Amino acid sequence: MTGKKEGLNDAEPYPEQWYDWKWQFRNRITTIEELEKIIHLSEKEKEDISKCLEHFRMAITPYYASLMDSNDPMCPIRMQAVPTINETRIGPYELADPLDEERDSPVKNIVHRYPDRVLFLVTHMCSMYCRHCTRRRTVGEEDFVISDAEVDAAVDYIAKNPNIRDVLLSGGDPLTMSDARLEKIISKLRNIEHVEIIRIGTRVPVVMPMRITPDLLAMLRKYHPIWINTHFNHPKELTPEAVKACSDIVDAGIPLGNQSVLLRNINDNTETMKELLLKLVKARVRPYYLYQCDMSQGLSHFRTKVETGVEIIQNLTGNISGYAVPKFVIDAPHGGGKVPINPKYVITMDNNEVVMRNYEGEIYKYPQPN
Ligand SMILES: *Cc1c(COP(=O)(O)O)cnc(C)c1O
Ligand code: SF4
Image (cartoon, rainbow, N blue to C red; front, side):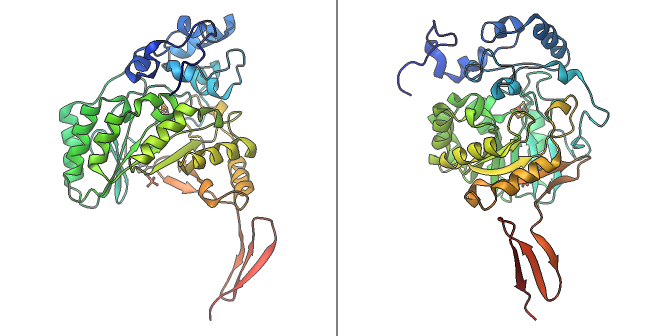
């Protein structure tokens, strides 16, 4: 990183420790008083935020806060970080655990829904508490890391199930843990012969990119194959710091994917999504999933019609590199798993031929072999 950046308010330069992730973590904005120093808040907004804070926590890294527009409540960065009164409105269909993850949990902190892979929730902590988080019932409730005994019980479950070849470390955000703590877990998993790949789901490259240190990457590369999936939602998040974190990850031989959530008034249009996806590919990040927003409590203001996602995918397919187009999925309520929702390209398909539409809407026929 070259030179000092402009300060949070332009009068002050960024503090010395700006690029120290532990400093970023310690100095997260968690109160209205701290928030007020960075963005303009009306009395009404302050009242609303304090009502939200009774239900859900707030934590924003100084880095991510510095990307917020201090005067615009519709700023896409701000909307992901700062609570609004909408979160206290629980819609009739909204659930505390929309994906029934508790039901699919054979042992604490493991979600085993698919035959060959498990989610391993290693911490409830995140560097930022995203306002649209699906796991808000657990994430952000308390800052705790799971105990050694719990890690061992989960590792034991994986060791005893030879069909598990892919372990996804998630949470919370695994990269809020220390390198040592993380290594302890990863090395245990790496000792299990049938575990082929280890994946880490993390929003750190987006909200605290200074966490991606040479030490962390040197540790991770000892346990290859490691994959990472991150979570960029808006092109404004691809700052030089974030792009650098992504290239460092990829340079460590770690394939880097991205999952976005389709969010109303943040990224629910083709233009924004296209800019995001192209910037990701340029940063060597492969768009993986675009999620329809889950039915977690207090998220109705973020949800779009499913058609919006289908339209965006249809507008992008064929028009930009295939690499840049993610799979649009709904994580089906009650533990149905991820279901891909695709634009319709096949008009009819029978023994003789397939009639299909291309990305420009023209009709083509493909004769079947007889
Ligand atoms: C998303 C998810 C996975 C990983 O699914 P992929 O489609 O392989 O990325 C695994 N387990 C659970 C419970 C999940 O929700
Ligand atoms: S980083 Fe992920 S788990 Fe943490 S609050 Fe954001 S969406 Fe939820």
